[in-house]
Length: 280
Image 1 (cartoon, helix red, strand yellow):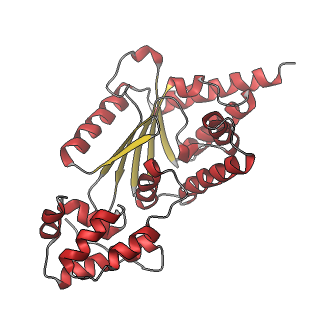
Image 2: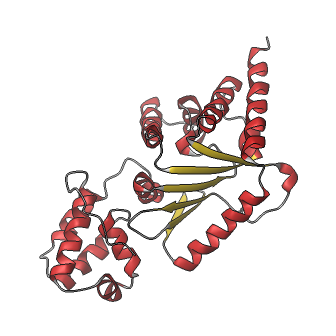
């Protein structure tokens, strides 16, 4: 496995914490495995902390200070490093997503956050929080659109999305908002920025019906799998479970329409929404 890259501590508090952890561990003469053992975490988890792809929680920071003799440095600084504009169950996944080189995602019901338009995202958050003040919804939409700016880079991350046909058919917001959302996906795919496939209803039962799935790969850390439920999310680095998630994704993609057929379906459904919006 390649060694961890040098981090720029000015990029974020989490990057600083990761760089300091690596420095303190190496000064103590410990390998990632040797530091992980008394913490009851894997060597890969320590590597992800050092690479900035995982959060250091306060209980882990406290034990790291004890093991490495760092006088409370990590406990004092982990709270600042963990500040996020995202919900707790998603914050760590969003941070990992921001440094991933590859992202493979299955979405059963909604357009994935990285592909959402402003109108679509607003409709999603308003449905989630029907009584929230408009300022709260504005802040949530802004954070989601900020995430989507990952795709401003022409090549990284490589994003491959498999959508259930329900994503296309379930109206979120107005017909105009749906048409815009689907045409946005089509445009990204046609300029080769993302790979999009659709699992049609005709496939029937499949392995990923239980919820969303995101697989993230990195140049300097082991891969991660992120799965979600209602107001819950789990980021997993266990190699056997990540491998199982990868198999699920591969089988799902094999059952999906080819990218060209998928784009044709996305365009057709977008056209249907456009005609619906134009009806008096």
